[in-house]
Image 1 (cartoon, rainbow, N blue to C red):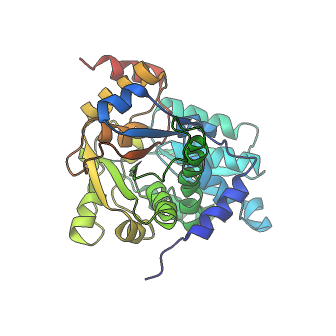
Image 2 (image 1 turned 135 degrees about the vertical axis):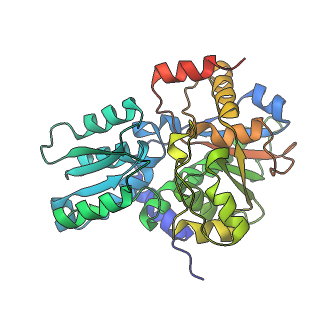
Image 3 (image 1 turned 45 degrees about the horizontal axis):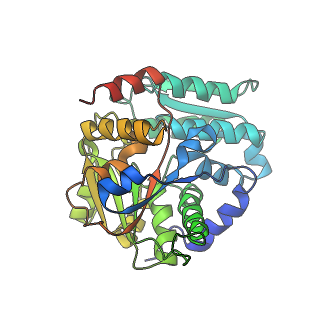
Length: 343
């Protein structure tokens, strides 16, 4: 079976993103290494433009629009980060955007999306009820009636390839850090990579890079306990659709994996594990206290799996582990509420 993307698609996306996306830092923590017994390398996409990895996929997709598509503009549906990413990318590329967002999306994300659209009278945000309305149907209807191009948040090859550039950069940066290793020797490849999972765009792109560069690398996805549709899908061997999950990880409140992302996950991902909302809050607290960074609940999924030793995760002690911190877009009042809830 031919998968939706390959390694060359990711390297092409990296070329399009050069000069537009930030080359986000790779962070280390002696405390995290001591707690886990591993050497952990955090790819900090909370420092990406608009605060999350989503900018990578959105810009890569919109940058490939024809002139006619750019004139008519783009439609996207998203709980927040893809919304902001598309709105910002559309503004940078000079095209209008219509963003369909849930009514209960974090106010910070709605305000930021509208802010990125400022100055374009042809751009707007449309709100819907995520528990009673179908965002995909709304997006399709608007795209047809307005002649705009719909770019979904994960199930699109250009989006998937763009997201994979986060892993590509991570591996390059780890190799660069290795030249200055304490023992003077080059750093060996990472042994494992942990990635958050919503619809599967990020992990499909990252797994494509990981398995191409190091087929022995273990790639694990992490979902919230309440939204383990991908975990169920892998167990069943087919896409499983669930009710909209109720979890603080709003970026992972997806109902099912994508038709394009799931085959990549099946082929390249070693397993999916889950963490609870309480474990997410605990991890956010630790990352803020020890590493001085603000991470949104979804962004903490991969780190939480490692720090809380999620069931199903292999023993990663004495391993070199990459962790994607996917974003930091969280209202500060909500952030304070969540981290202060940790005993």
